[in-house]
Image 1 (cartoon, rainbow, N blue to C red):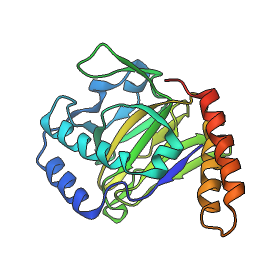
Image 2 (cartoon, rainbow, N blue to C red):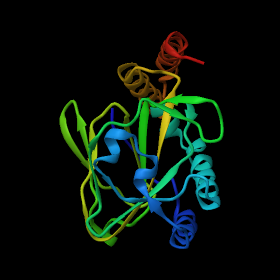
Image 3 (cartoon, rainbow, N blue to C red):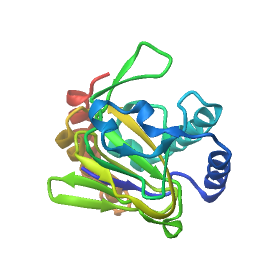
Image 4 (cartoon, helix red, strand yellow):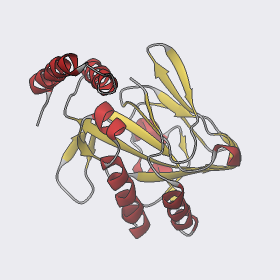
Length: 226
């Protein structure tokens, strides 16, 4: 399931993020890549231990906590601290699959990467190329979103970033360990939650809404890992 989450960051937050990233020191993106990814990864990345990465990551995580759509689609148990990348001058990222397990920085804890997320930070008109291509069950999906919007997709998906031929593409990216491991089960819960929210706007639909909500929570109770 691929979900577009609009307006995770507003204009004021984007201005702060871009200002901090503009003054930051970047490193070769291969510093955090696995063996296979490092062969096809050509971008710049903000060092994970930098003050800017921690500050901006907290802004994003706080915004995600307020996004009903993100919570509904991801059912997050753990969110990996957001990382930041930069593509320019022909940089791209070839086809790869994200590592299944990530160690949380500065801890002994590990996170299973059920979902991958890309949060676009550059305005679409400010660069050419830089499309996120996700291989889905329905074919290749080409993703290029407005600044502040996020795309959420299964981390098991083969994906790539096309070369940036003009301008600079800035983005944040991270992974989510969901309370519900299986993508098909998460999809069903997401669709049920969407239906419940739509029913809430329909007069005299209280009985149906209660019944559907009960089904939702009983399924979540059965599938969730805490």
